[in-house]
Length: 332
Image (tube, rainbow, N blue to C red; front, side, top):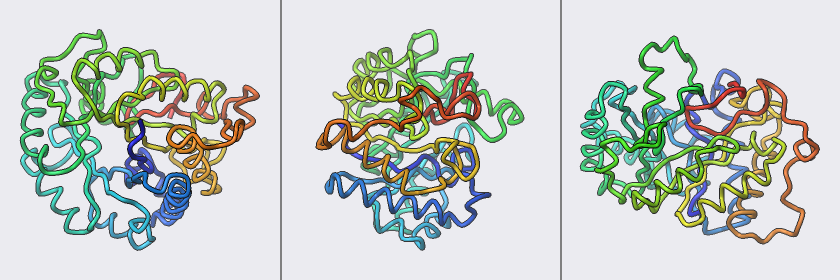
């Protein structure tokens, strides 16, 4: 069951939104407002969440507020990884939440928080337990990133890739379950009052494995995504239906993001779209398909080019929806 829709992922991060094209986030604001209006037209009571800030930045929040975005969302999301990438301490989490709460009356959700096992399994165990202590009673929604490790044959989606040095390889060790399907020690300390954030690649072979582990861990709330870019792939309709059917038993916050390269101002999944109404239409389509189910038969089909078998060109096809990870041959 979809319980909320999140508009974009980390829109103040260059890895997910090209702010060189849109330096004041005006295009993002226009797109988000249009999408929210169409979502509310389809499902007036469905919560709409502003895509998780990363870094946590009050100035950026005020900027998009000036574009009217906060008038069209029900909650504001933030992301943080203080033991791996951020330049602040784990103990500062409550202060980071308070900074955003002071800038908006909207509820604050933490839609990604996690700790890698890159250095040692014990670091993740400590990080999970301490994060839970600090935050589980502090905000309404927390999603641990992530359930599954990134397969080593894939790539991590980040601006700098290997030039990040050891920081790059932390992306591969964020899961509670290793790529060989065995649990890490931290899994025994997972508190089901937290949710899980788990992204799935297009036609991801790990979907059934993930569902099994979500059940084992007692997870009720799940955050995942549906990619606008993937909707332009051949076979998108079947894959989207399979994914959402498999996840139907969980309370899902679904993130909608990633521009089909052929529909961007620049041919890249981080680009602002040429026509923001196309993303808004995609958002409404996903809600009518997977929340209300009230559209006429045949009205919610993928674009004609995908149905005809022509993948959106650029980098071997449209990028799959994953927060930081993407397998070849789909390049970002």
